[in-house]
Structure formats: C-alpha cells, structure tokens
Length: 403
Ligand SMILES: [Ca+2]
Ligand SMILES: [Ca+2]
Image 1 (cartoon, helix red, strand yellow):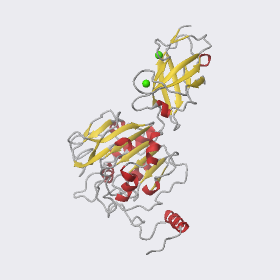
Image 2: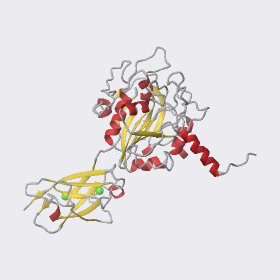
Image 3: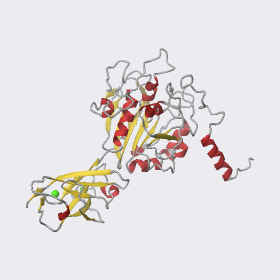
C-alpha cells in the first residue's frame, strides 16, 4: 500500500503545477493549433492576477485553434480586447467569482471537465450562485466532440436553471429569433469578426459544419428566448434569465467553425461570426439594467401625488417569474422620484406582500414625498435600486400630479 503524502507536500506540488507546465503536458509550446485536435491545457495557461472581468473555464482546447494554441474562445477574447483569465474546472467549486462580470465555457471539453462542472449530476453550486446574483454566463456546451483531449459528455446532467440536453448531430440549423443581437451581430465588436448571421441553407453561416450542432436543449426555463433551432425545430442556442443573471447556452459547434473545420477534407471555409457575436453580446449584457415592474401606490389608480403633501408614497417593486423581488432587492438602495435618482427612501417593509394578486410576493417601500422632486405636469415616476448582487434595476409607473 502507498504511503499517504503529507497535505503540505500536495499543496506545494499543486502550486508548482500552477506556475510551470509539466514536461509531459500535451499542451506545451509544441502544439501548433492544427496538427492534433484538442490537447489538455495546463492549469496556468492564463492565470488570474486580479482585476480581470471575464473568466474562461477551460481544461482542453476546443478542437483546433489555428490562431492561438489556447483555443478559439481565447483567440476571440483577445481579438475583442477583453480583460480575461482562465481557470481549470477543478478550481470552480468555492472559487471567488464575484469580480467577474461574465464567464465563458468553451465546447468540446474532456470528461474530467464535465465531471467537475456537474458534481452529483447538477451544475456546480458556486457557478449557479454567481449567475443568480447577476452574472452573465455564456456556455458553449457541445459535448461528445472529436479530439484527443475532448470527447467528454454531460449526459443526464442538469445545467443552470434545470436545462438538460440530448445528443443529436444536425447539419441544418435555422434562425428562430431573427432580431436577436447574436443573429444580427449588432453588439460592439472590436475584433471586426462579428456580422449578421444569414441562413441560406448553403455551406456558410449555419449549415453543414459537420456537424453544426451536437444536440439540443430540453427543460427550458420560463422566459427563454430560442435563438437557433435544428432541422427538427429543437433549440440549439438559447438565452434565459436566471435570478438577476443571464445564461446564453449553445450546443452548436461555433468554435469548430471559427477554426475552419481543420482536419476535414476538403478544408472548409472559416466562419468566425457566431462565436464572435456571442462573445460581443455577452459582454454587452454585463452592465445591463434589469427592468422590473413597479406599482406606485398599490391598490390605487390613477397614482395621484400631491406635491405639497408631507407624507410618504408607497411603491411596490413587483416580482415576476424571472425576478424574485424579495430575494433580490437590496432594500437599502432604492431611490425614487421624477428622475429615479432622488434620495427619498424612508424605509422598505420588512415583510413582503403580494400587492397585485399574482401569487408572487412583492417588495413595498415608502418614500418621502417632499424628496421625490415631482412637479406639476410629470407623468412618470422612476425607481432605481441594486440587487443583493449589486446589479442595477429600474422600474417605471405612471403618476398624476394633482397640485
Ligand atoms: Ca397604483
Ligand atoms: Ca405580486
């Protein structure tokens, strides 16, 4: 029987492994991104120094990476000038993810990766909690991919919000949400690699990537936008809210196409748009304001306000299937009035109440009338605040100024 190794020796050797590539590491500098697909990346391929805003969770290169041997997600992040770093899947549990506005998971990872990401069959709790509190998670989840370091799967596992998937190759993809920024390619994109996705049923933007998708999603949460579907109309790229956060998930092989179908005969054209659009779009969501429902003076309409009154104005921040106000509103933060920036908060009720009888508890706060700044002729009241995770939210309701 093997002698056990003292704990501190293990820690030291892990630290060393994190600062230098081992000699037998298949990801050492000899990998040219083309000659063999998907090697395992060493743990330190892009260590976090502090201050980065984008995190990549990655163990292996996605298929081939002709531009940067660390992969095509990394290639595009650099091309878009993002401040990013990367960790291995075995560093996710318990990690401090709060500093990151968005996280991206590349496709075509190995089994160890998916086992770490889905301990006990469900998405890691650290990652789940980070999305709940407002993070933007972009998950490229094409599994069972070819390649030396790839081939892992997350069969039977539950992703963020209960989403599951079925493995099914498909070559003919179709746009389901023509106006979505990922399809239109309209998010700010410093790399110049973005562009409108055009489905011509030719070997161009979406079809015949061999394969264009490795599966489709099931168990879609309330509020899901289906962006791209397969030949049987099943969702292969989706976006959905989760707590204060957002998830963009895809089973498409966008990184494969970004690399240009290397290894295939004949070599296909490169198409960088889908991956570039996705990264540009997820970045555009990081500083988004969450829009919430508002009811100024619950149980009363019109919402009459007397500017001379020295009393308080009750305002309900309404829950919805995708916004749990009691769980998410930081009750010390609301500002309310004619612009929404007025420091007029008196207090928020400790106990929450369903003011609009939709079965969901709402948050009711009270604002000092004299501090709201309303003037004759105003037609709207605006409330702004922060979630528990520090994300800004905003709501608007009508007012009628009586004097
Ligand atoms: Ca009202
Ligand atoms: Ca309600």
